[in-house]
Image (cartoon, rainbow, N blue to C red):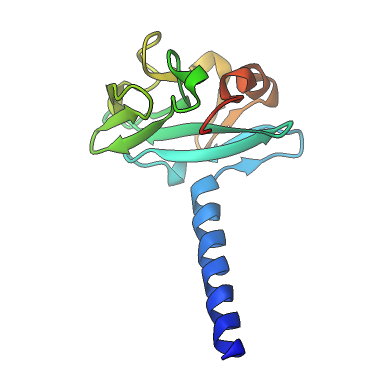
Length: 151
């Protein structure tokens, strides 16, 4: 009986860790920058977690219909202070978990202002053929937007 419980607990922990690892995705470079492999980005938003000074943050990335990879902070420009101003994807839209605003996923990084994910535009990241890198300094500037996030 004890062995069966131990195996069950081990299995649950392993599944949770593998789910979290798949969720986190990106690579934290030695200098603290977040690097995302373009190969893993598809039309369904992927969420990359980043922790800075104890504050959990999240970057979302998705492949737009034109083939480009679009990035944004997964927090709403209007609702971030509520702690629930983050997005989940439903079909081809992102839905704010605070106000319910629906935002076309293909518009990530294009639309600025209002109730939508905060764009991480070309001037805020470094991009090459294989990766997108977001500097720790850019992530640090966004940290105040995540202080109450998902509380």
